[in-house]
Image 1 (cartoon, helix red, strand yellow):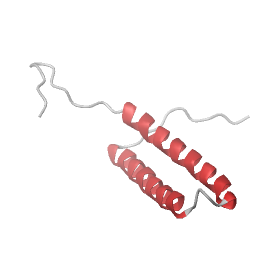
Image 2 (tube, rainbow, N blue to C red):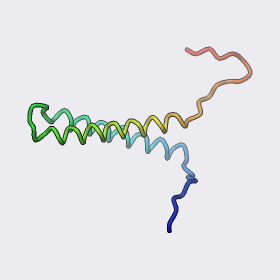
Image 3 (cartoon, one colour):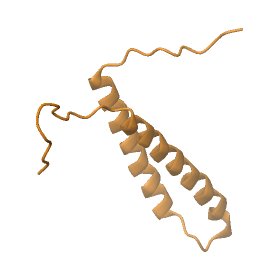
Length: 81
């Protein structure tokens, strides 16, 4: 039985491309959602599917964001802005 690869070797550029593609997909889903009417019952199922896709897309972007390590100097107190 095949197993999943649990080790990925992605560069920062690769992750950036993935994030940009997910953001572009999110914009397209948003445009599709706006084009549909909440009043038309035929569109209601499509709206539900699009919103589920949007939620899944945003959750994946959030998981990618949470895995990043942001620079924070260790020698001196950090003051932002």
